[in-house]
Amino acid sequence: MATVLVVDDVEMFRSVVAHALKGAGHRPICASDGAAGLALLETERVDLVLLDLAMPKMNGLEFLQKIRADERFRSVPVVVVSASSQGSKAPPLASMGAQGQLLKSRFSLRDLIQCVNDLVRSAA
Image (cartoon, rainbow, N blue to C red; front, side, top):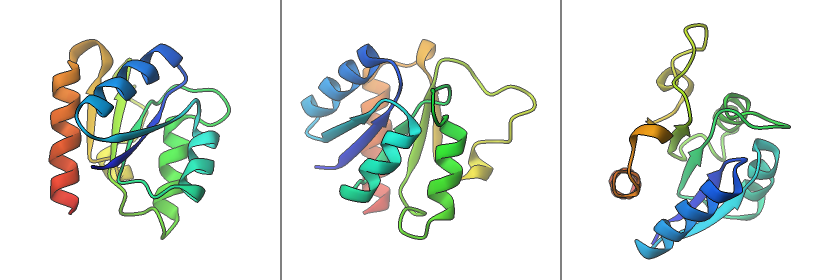
């Protein structure tokens, strides 16, 4: 069982993903923005992060930069799950330390769980 931090400002999305993760035997914890996600990283041992890009207070790119700059969280796998692909001016997510990206409009919960399971296995 992996602990998966879901960082997304849309409560319905967090709820659906958390339910799917529980059904797959994982332990989801949720945050509504990057700042809340960072606070949870301070108190929880997290095996993987599912991260939205567009959020209030602290967006996903800021969150990703902060955890990659912190030795304690540098190796935690991050999958960006966003409503839109990056704009042409945004840096490539892989170069920022993301292990994957899924578009909300093009993935199924089955795909998401498979991605989580693959990354958790490879990190072990």
